[in-house]
Structures are given as C-alpha cells and as structure tokens.
Length: 73
Image (tube, rainbow, N blue to C red; front, side, top):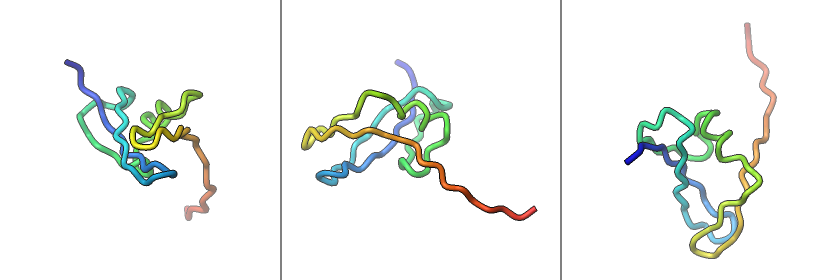
C-alpha cells in the first residue's frame, strides 16, 4: 500500500468537503487545505480533468491564480 497526501476542497455548488488524494508531494500522509497545499501538490491537482463532487456531481476544476506581492529587501 502506497502513501499519499490529501487536499481538502470545498465544492462551490453545495459546500461539501471533498478529500482528493495526491502522490505528488512527499507523501507523508499529510492533509492540506487547498489554499495551503505545497506547490508540487497544487501542480498535480491542476489538470484538464475536473474533480466531481460526490454529493452533487458538480465538476470542479482546480486552476492557479498568481497574486503579485511586494516584498522588502
């Protein structure tokens, strides 16, 4: 049995919490919120195939939106 990490995703249609497994990170059986997941895991979830909500069958597509930040030197 392999190890994996999980990401919690809230369905935008019905509010159901979905647990999506990924083997992209260090696979330490960690659980991340979508907003806090490491870049490697997020990259794995961004795909052409939507994740279907098991409650309402709403198709959920994960996309990356980059927000610029000013940092002090």
